[in-house]
Image (cartoon, rainbow, N blue to C red; front, side):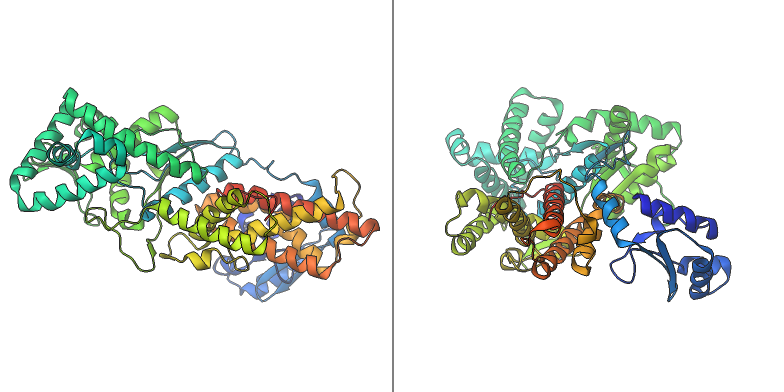
Length: 550
């Protein structure tokens, strides 16, 4: 929290005891900070306008004008003092989550299936949240909970033995596995013998049969090799790749806990936990003795809490899995685990490309790497036309093309369904990743031409006109913006702030001649440097590169 925000909060708290620090928000219009008084109306039995007016009359902070307007308590700081404080603060030093451990389960690719466009949202939302919490001081554990358990893997072995061979697997890799998977699914619907054979191979994997496990491990290695290539392009790394299979032998420990609490019931041969009238029961084991997904997730939750002692565990999974996580958290709550409240389902909407529906089983799948390649190709064409003299265009095009896809996914609220458009994402003049990257490059170009070096004194009066001051305000509380995004699990808070900073800087750039000499030039270059640093920092938090030239 900035010094001025703290000062305002402490002064307002004396008049409005119910005030929380989060109620004091930065404002782009009318003032620098404001407090909406609507939440106090019921408590104080007065209108928001009356509350704001009475509070404004009672608050006196030297150097800060306090006013009421339409139910808002507005605070306007003396501009030069605000600019001075903004430049005194160091970007990235705010560490409100120091000492906290945050586990983030995201991406979670399935073995023998391609990394397709449907994995985009979980991967980039989770990756961004990891960066936010690390930047804010937390110890973050990024977890890729691999989908590596189930009958389908027995089916894959059956398909490989029937229709595949080592040579094709070595040359085609994941493409071969996908083709075999689709063929198995189609053929097993017509031939029960194939489905039965698949179940037999699945049981062999689970029992530790050396041949079956060895073959499956090979399939897993091929899948991860391809996935890690995509993760590298997205600037994402994981701390754990433990998948479902790791937790199979730990389900018994969960069942023992459920039995001890008298929670495990039998229904038509299956083992369930009843969750009341509001939710269907959680199915722990089928009547044939096989454990279910929620049982392995319960085992994973216990393992993570015991291993990492997390303060919060996030699951970045699509919104259609909401019931599963409600059941998961409810079972932990029934078990009396106090940390059940620290489990969070970070849901998101679905993604499509020009309305195309995706289904791996039917082979109708769009690889994410193909989408990234197409974006890079289009970015290279645009850059070649706009900046024909630019060196190393291919490297810049990779940063811009991949960044365009990621930024587009993170620009709207995560719950909104996304229909990806390559043309929209690569618009250099829109609210896009390339626009932010280009503004950063423009700032670096200005600084390079001026031979700017930081460390010289700044005449803060030179940055008090409307365009400069608006820009200062937007970069001044960027760390608070990151904290807000982390607490809301919402990367769009950061991406939209970056676009606002770019828009404000470009208005400043057009209104205030930077290379004007004297104290004004020094101050305007200092602001340009602060904007460039903030954009680079924010882009990296959102998994994007920040090219020096474009």
